[in-house]
Amino acid sequence: MLPTPVEGPVGPDDAAFLPRMRMTLYAPGQPVTEPVAKLGGSPVWLTEPAWPVSPTSGEPLMFIGQFPVPVAAGEVARLAYLFLEEDSLFMGGLDGPDEEPGDAALIVQPGGRVRPGVRIGPPGITGPTLWTDAVEQVPVEWLVDLAPFDPRTEEAIEQYVGWSNGERGEPDVWSDDPRDWLAGRPLYPNFAVVGRPWRFFFQLHDLEGTLDDPYFLNFGGGTGHAYLSTDGLEGIFVWQGA
Image (cartoon, rainbow, N blue to C red; front, side, top):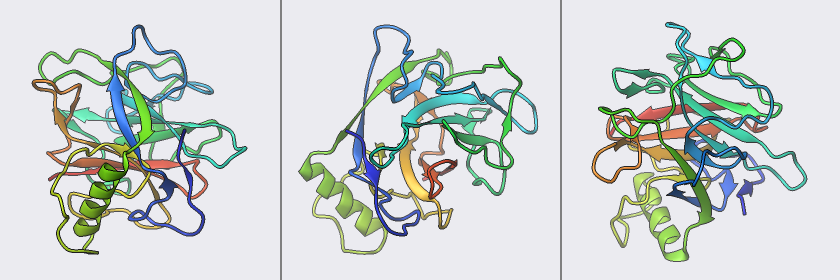
């Protein structure tokens, strides 16, 4: 089961796709070669490889993961591939796609558009992938199981999102976990930094790669958000610190 697009105009604060899906990670028994949701490892391209590079240094960006794009019934299945520049353990995407274009890339296949400012490397180029931690920097790979939240958790998330957006009073139950999901409404550390017509796609929260953390992503203690264009063929990614 995958979420499907919501009819009507929506913006970055709204639910563009429903239902909201929990991301549950589990280790694959071998390298993943199927076009499924995952973090780390190597991208499983649906068409020609399109590994982006930094517009400033020319170095390949880090592959973070691949995610199924919600499509209407009968449409071609697509994947979105997230790449971020890693600079002194900070990830690209902090300033948004209009401030430093190219330090974060969300590539959609098949039929997707490469956003202006994103630079695709030469044929055959590959680069780093998601790490376990900032010290050892051992590549990791996790399969991502996507499934709807149970009703109680979904209600708790919606209350928290509504409170964060100023739509309601304090939640009945305070919780900021889980913080990773695909579809539904986003939860922002501060506020949306992109406007219409971008549609919220998924969010990933900061992890230090310590103790039992499954990987390392430095978003300044905050959260990163992915968005799709109205036709689902172009993507952007931006993060905010806590």
